Length: 201
Image (cartoon, rainbow, N blue to C red; front, side, top):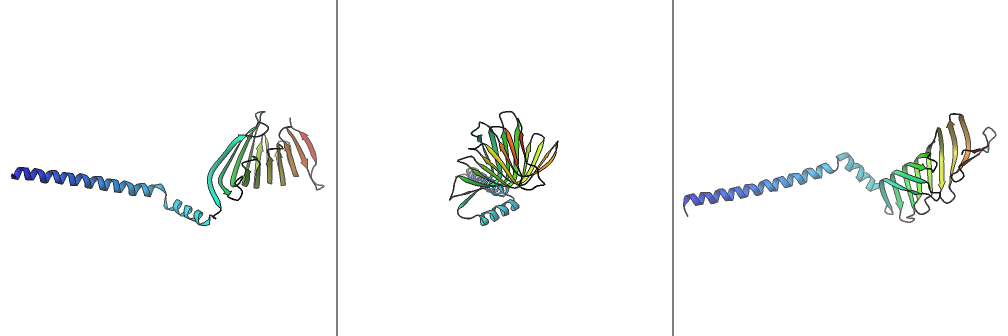
């Protein structure tokens, strides 16, 4: 074999080895950077903490949304930043940081927010707990508990109920909003609070 052919072979082999090394290191670096970019150190730490707190009989979901129609034909959207579904009762979903919208046939919208909540994905019943805030038209409502019954088409608000409206502020023990009849019953057990029945059609 002549020196020229031998030199060409050496150059060819060198080029092939160099190409293989470039491909290997490029691929390895990409894999490394992809792994690094998926989660920041802070996010990875939070995930590990959540996994360590998780009990074996629960599934935790984040940023969930339920939507549909109630039995009265009104549309609703229920959102939660965090939800836990117990394997003992898969129909019940316990939620945190809850935000619900009820779109009524007359074009009005009821927005209910709370720190905690519960959703029955079979009956479509909803419960809201802790720092409940609701907006309906020009009225704002504050309480510690609100329960929506799909079967009865009722929204029952209780525990430290305060309603702020253009007409003033009202305190009550319990409010029952009948979605089908579009009426509001106001109940009170103490003398310094107002009992009333309002037709809000």
